[in-house]
Image (tube, rainbow, N blue to C red):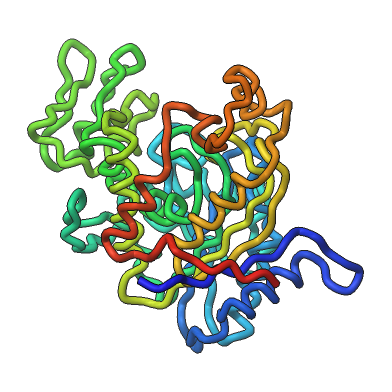
Length: 372
């Protein structure tokens, strides 16, 4: 496969061009206007940030993308899917409230927010891909309903996947609750019986009789469970959770295959901003100081090349001494030739996701970096 073009610009600005104008120029130079947006619905996939986290992308950047889509005749909306874990984005109502608190209101961004997998995380489209690890991806219905897909990614560290880049934003982010369970594990939730009050909400919502109440506590029969995630949504005590059992590599393989399910057979465009590079995902209700200085903004039609370019640029940066990365480096004697993200979270790695994405034809890790 020939090299993909990845367009890059720094965060340096002048009195003649601010960062928002620069982002617009980056997208234009990267070929955004070659997409036919006329009367098309355009999903802009972004992470709204967990309540309490301040590292997420500012809504001003989302406004640039939404306005550009409208300028080209399209109908944009910002979107993300509900989370698998307990937090401020577990259902659509809480998710919308968090998005608005964090500044992603229609008045700030110029477009509406639609939670891709509906009120309780069960509104999904089944996308056949016959992958090595995923046969049918479960993607938020509103995302698959869109004519054009755009990812707007905050590039940062991640405590499970090494880094949270474009493929993480697409693959994991666009999965419904059942889709997220499938990626994280074998798709079967379990009950924390110390938190369970035996109310029976899980057994009433289940169409397969998997949750059973015995001695005032619920348990889930994994032989009957199909991994739909409805029980997670209705539990009033948040006593039900997915079992995170798969290896990091398998998680990465599944994310790549889910990304393919989202992107195949329709126009896609990808933007990634390397700023406020926190060590952990924006799903955390807190954010630690960045592990490296701000790098820049990148755009490409190839999500794999984009992630590879972002990782390469990050690894060229000098670590912030007082960050987790800086602390780990000092503990390891400032190990030369290290990978910043692996050094930040030594139990993780990200290269398997890139390699599998190349293998399944989602993109290439060979790229030409075009600086504007």
